[in-house]
Length: 439
Image (cartoon, rainbow, N blue to C red; front, side, top):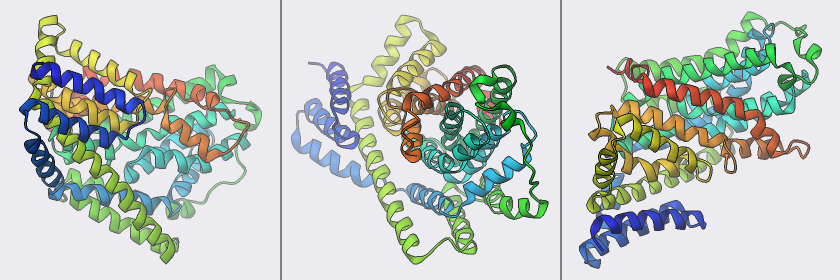
């Protein structure tokens, strides 16, 4: 068996092992080690290769970004910042059709700028926004679907853990990835808000159980002073992180450290951080960071094995022979990602597909920053599509309401998938949307 055939065989075997339940990290490391063994016909070389790649895979200073942003997100989550952000957005949108839905999208967009994890957004706003929307006459389908759908902004609006993972795998600047995600993230947020307004106007049965109650303006008007008190901490944190990155003051790692320090100050100022909570936050930060770093080590091994076997080059030659062209390849690559999104989580898809796709995309002339933004949007769509849909399952689990079935949440999230699809096509065809702030 030649090296290319062996490489493709190992990719197929790896996907099969993942589908039967073997952990993604273990599968990637095992596939890489066995691949090097068979390609070089030297088991000692395979073991030495694995040991060296494990050490060199995460020794770079850049990898400190991961625990720092995870710590910042967890500190923000326990500080009730998400609840306050939603209440301010609710007060500002109270006279607009579908106002609570738009408030959820707006609060999620701001919350996303300091968490970087879609699942955290889904969990926080399920507790905060869903009860408020259903109490005001919105359907459970719309309320839960809006929380699940807008939660994907957590991975699109920087900082984003998926952007960090992509940046490491594709060897591109994480700071540039963060900056490139700002405009696409805002396009998605505005698209979601516009869709909510149109549905509330032209398809009110999807949005309202009790339209009269939903359109009734709340009697309480939040004083400006209260709005400022609730909104300023998170806005300052967002401005500090993104302003520092965009202004070239911070590297991504330094931005993570500054953001974590700012989140710690907010938690202390709000008296939300006891010693037991702080210890729990530190422990969870360690667990999440260790899991991500282990996966990145595994992906590094897997990527080197694929390159050794010549798999990316073989796929690139095949695309050229088929005459698909750059956008034909991009369409096929994104279609595979969307299909994988139905059965795998976002990080796993990136770990599997980026080492294969990036060398081909680079050879075909794609800007890897633009390519990364498009890939991340496609991966995020998988958070809302059955049967996996991890954001949908997060909403269902957090809500813990037997009256609301998982199919109801998937149905509510479907319009958001459609908006993401349209945005994906737009950003894919107009690269400047993703690159204009970077260049």
